Length: 278
Image 1 (spheres, one colour):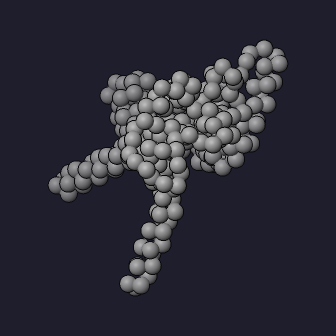
Image 2 (cartoon, helix red, strand yellow; image 1 turned 30 degrees about the vertical axis):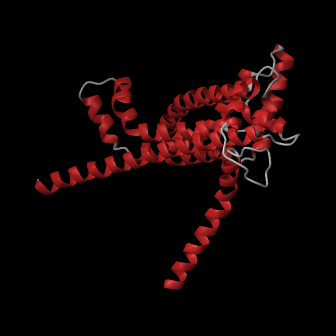
Image 3 (spheres, one colour; image 1 turned 120 degrees about the horizontal axis):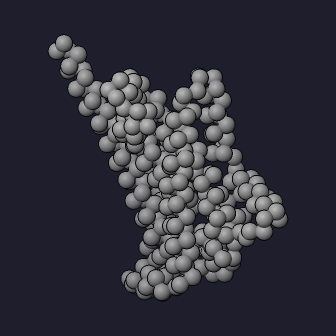
């Protein structure tokens, strides 16, 4: 028994090393004084300073943040409305719709990217609009929607349906019951889905590469252009900042989920005590 536990710990340790050792090396060399990728010659922040002074990279970073923010907010609103509508269907119809909703998550990104590109080219020939901000935003909203729905649906299934009925009996309209009861109960799922959508949108390359235009370039596409020549240390600095940003978002998402679980346990404990006293 002890040998199996030791073996599992060694296995987990090796997995963590293989996953995070390359990232750790990248972070260390983002502070390297020289451009050498073999020797650490001294500690410096000059590559971060050069990164902030590079207008092209900062513009593409702003574009990525803008797209990620707008796509996550819009997909959260549309996805939440879709999840509430799907929850009203019967069991069989709901299962079919959820399976269809899950397909884009399993679908390879390159297939989605080429499909979106062909769709936009078709409309481009009809209406004459150009690839750019609008096409990237629509594509990101499209592949973010399933993540919102898949995060909100479990919260809707966990919610007590009698709460909505009680709100209606107490004089709330369906709209008031939605905003005062349903939204409050499923908010952790909405936040988790929105944060996941933000991270997925921020670092997406494949789909963005097929739908972007010369007037609007996202950061992953701009970084791809840098890989055609030897990488400069300021790109290491950029990767480090992106890793820390994604790590922060994931920590916030885990805290939101942990807080929701703690609130539900407390609520069950309160109702359990009331039932016992009754």
